[in-house]
Amino acid sequence: MIKLTYVLFRRPELSRDEFQKYWLENHAPLVASVQDALRIKRYVQVHTFADAGDDPDSPRGKMHDAHDGVAELWWESLEDIAEAQ
Image (tube, rainbow, N blue to C red):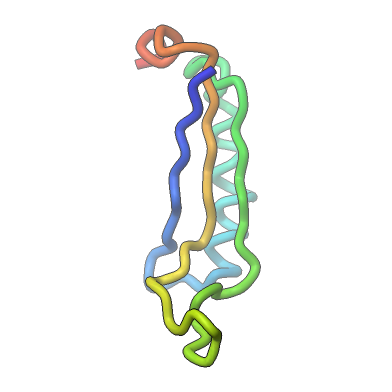
C-alpha cells in the first residue's frame, strides 16, 4: 500500500471555515469522481478545528503557521500510481 500525505494551507483570502467548506463540499466530490480512473483506493481529509500553535502564551509559544488540514491518498502499488498518470 502506498500512501501520500499532504499538509494543506488555505489561500490567504479564505477563512478556515470557507476553506474547509470548499474542501469538503467541492474538492472531495471532485476526487471521488476520478477515484477509479486514478486508481485511488482511499481518500481521507483531516480537518483542523483551531489555530494550533497560535497562542503565544502556550507553554510551547508561537509555532510555525498552523496548517488547515491534511489529505491522504492511498494506492495499492507504485504501478497503480504510474498507470493512473
